[in-house]
Image 1 (cartoon, each protein chain N blue to C red):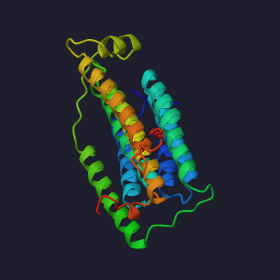
Image 2 (cartoon, rainbow over the protein chains, first blue to last red; image 1 turned 135 degrees about the vertical axis):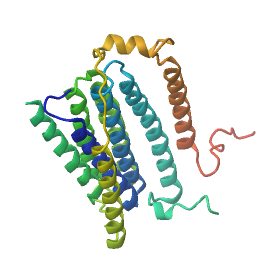
Image 3 (tube, rainbow over the protein chains, first blue to last red; image 1 turned 180 degrees about the vertical axis):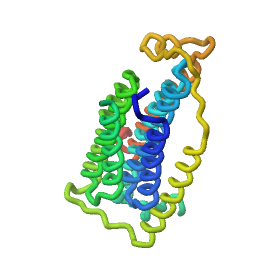
Image 4 (tube, chains in turn orange, cyan; image 1 turned 30 degrees about the vertical axis):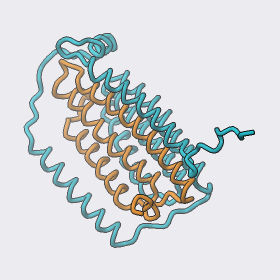
Length: 105
Length: 177
């Protein structure tokens, strides 16, 4: 535990980070910035896992494993998303969410 | 001392993530994201999870941010400025996020967390043994599943990025004599 810092302070920071990510996810129109907001959301969740492990259940490193797997899944997701963005840019020369409607037709 | 470092890290995380979702320049936004991810790694180091901090630094700050910067440079002009979101949209999103954050923090503040008083096990030996054990508290199955997921993502990424408009077959066909 960090001396003098309660669990609630860490959870507050991670909650605020999560909702800043949600704000970016809603307001941004560029696919790459939407992806970056997604990274913020995932990181906010990962801090929670580590903090719960450290403060509440120190006997087992389960929270660390969850964080590790979360990072691995995030890496896989980013690789696929970047591939989609590059392919999309080749097709329609734009990565704006508004212009992406090829699945409609 | 740790308290001061924690507050500095928290301020860095919050400010830089706010800059990252509001900056009009894409590349700057990515650099702010790099700062946020490094500060999160610093937080992991601060609570003593050194392996987690190292993984965060190498995969997130080293891999994912570089990938994002690559894709930005491939698809945008370097001095491209994005348009600001509309006033109604940003106000609505801000109100939504504020309400959500207030509700979450209220719930967390009123929740009685109970600490299990056990000896801490977080050294790298325990971590490695448990990650490859199929016994009690072992994580062998998720470990193997993640390796399959990463393989699938790798192949999927190659296939999607390689796909061209004409189906990608013309280049491979040899001209018939």
